[in-house]
Image (tube, rainbow, N blue to C red):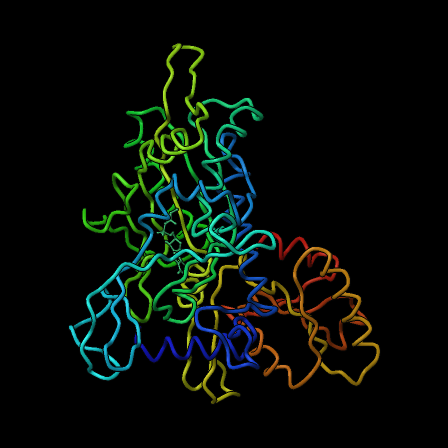
Length: 437
Ligand code: GAP
């Protein structure tokens, strides 16, 4: 895929209401985005799929929704106040700032001016709690959801009557004051993470690490339907590892702009629990009743970014067809081959014509019946071919057309997005046929 494909995908997501620049009418704000009607459906479907795969289908993984702002000591203990920073270089001439490790040479990429010595820039957003703004009221927006999990480790252990190994999963917003946000929604300042911390007996981490890498790749390819050749697992080099990680692999997607990380799977040892034990004074040891051993568990963490997966899924499904797919259309067409479980709209309900009341009434009946089971769109404007193309473009797997015969026979045409095949089916069979497929 080429760069200009990325531009096409970006403009497509805006045109069809998947993604908007945040505060658009004010000229936007760097690193923040809003998600429109189709975007929010696609995101919810990805989130639900992750939750179902990671939490609901597993007996020993528990869900959590912790607060975004936490006691600042959490970030002291986790090391974020001290070390969660990127090197920043400022141009002496135009005073623009850049991430040092993203610069190709030692000159300003904007004006070619000389750069100052790099300094470390902490990525956490600061705020104040209560009416007084001083050092004692400083708080931070969480830069990862993981710490909310670690500080609740004991609560979950005590309330859920579980045993090691077990995991805690959470989906939620995270905030990083990125020096250079970019690549559309790839690097943002407000984004959403889906993280799971898996607690194991020390010594069992390598086995669990391997297991979760396999599980996560399986989710991308078999559940989300991302093409295998567009996904790779890359082991991080020693100098890339975060301060807490003993080992880490990145799952990367082949974006039109190159291979980039969508998920990190880290072996965190007992770093976080031992730090929180030290800073909070709470005993966070696990007591094994059978072996009478007491220990701090080791942690394996699969951590992914919803926005990056959303972008990967769109890039993977995006097809541009020069000259159109049918003989009647010669224009360029777009086809979004999303797997049906994540498609924002599952069924389009289309009366063949809009000026015949019996047909539109029947179509609305069908729509009302289907919308209790699937996310549906009713569309009666424009020629039928054009309406099919509008649905193909947003990845709707099924289109149901109601015509003159439907009134007499109580049947409709069911069209498949990918094959464009049309079959005649009874209205009463629609739900089960769509469900089966
Ligand atoms: N708890 C571990 C952790 O936060 P990370 O590699 O910094 O690890 C995990 O982040 C995932 O969060 C990344 O793989 C990426 O998908 C997503 N992510 C991180 N920073 C992001 C940003 N600025 N914009 C969008 N997604 C981001």
